[in-house]
Length: 151
Image (cartoon, rainbow, N blue to C red; front, side, top):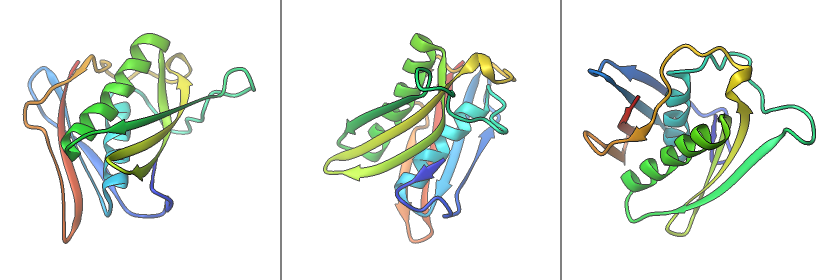
């Protein structure tokens, strides 16, 4: 997962125990890296992404480009993850690479997708993003976010 233009920047994510739902915390030096890590954390909660690549072949390569505008960073996080859930529900595909670029009032996301049937399923897929405990912000040590999803 990449944020902005430097894929070597540190960042990470983890799942946090949460009753009957999925809770993910992510962090990074920039907002873009942090949010890309959140996407990765959500996808790794139900798919084994080790060695995952975008779907091969000219007809199967899917790059989804989405511009998201929002008033707050929390709203950007929700919109980004709702986009992931949408493609999962409607096309049975998940992002294996995410590139986020800031635009005025939001972000542009380039999602490189693969069929979920091509990856080992290791958990329940998310169905919706909730607003409970939602947080996203930056400080002197970088950015962090927390989000809960219904599974």
